[in-house]
Amino acid sequence: MTEFFEEVEEQLRSDRYRQFARKALPWLLGIAAVALVATLGYWGYDTWRGNKTAQASQQYSDAMDAFTSGDADKARQLFTQVSQSDAAAYKSLALMHLAAFAQRDKKTDEAVKLLDQAAAAAPDPVIGDVARLKSALALLDTAPLKDVEGRLKPLMEDGHPYRLEAREALAFAKLRAGDIAGARGDFVLLSQALDATQGVQTRAQAAIGLIDSGSAKAVPDVVKAAEALPSPMTVTPGQIVGPQPQEAAPQ
Figure 1 (cartoon, rainbow, N blue to C red):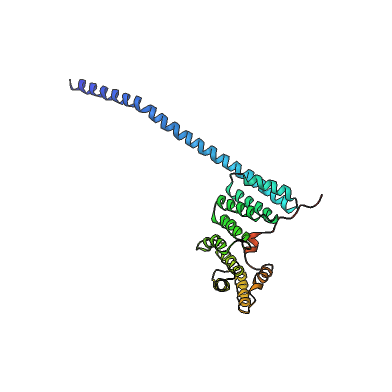
Figure 2 (cartoon, rainbow, N blue to C red):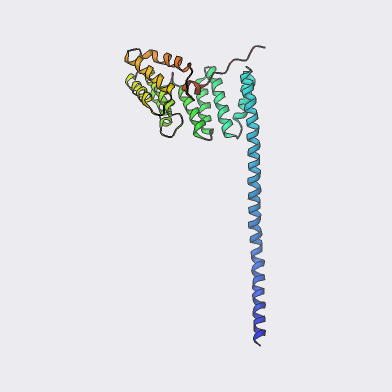
């Protein structure tokens, strides 16, 4: 009799397990399907993103080749195509090149707009801060000091890659605005900065000497001449601005 009851109990347990399995199976299958769709979706997106990046890379390379060979129209066309891509780094760099074309055409407002777009599209501060510094330099001769300062001060904070170049640009902006004491203070900081390159320190010392001699107006020209000399600097404000696009060679 005991064996009979145990057999009946085992049969009931089996029936309950089967009922539970029938109820749970659709949920389990649904979860598995969602996981599969998510995996395939990520793989598809990653593949699509890789293809877009590869395409943008090739277009950017072709644009640089056209630019180097003097075909400005083709370079601008290709840079425009890259600027519309989803590859953040290449998009940002292409927008900066388009801004250089705008600056060549004396379209400062358009150049600044493109540089702001480049900064927003940049995937990291190394590229983004270059665009922000370029936008401030584009406004250096025309915008009020407070506007230029507003663009440069965030770049001067610790951890930003071009903080010394931003301070140097701000010193020039102060000179142009007539703030000689403020400019001198910035140049003193640059001349004493432990992480400043030899080129930055040399220019700062030259600027201080000119200011102290009463020749503050000559500082920008002297610094431009100094930037043309070989130096161990990796990046200077002049290099960040970059060469202006050349006109295409006549056919």
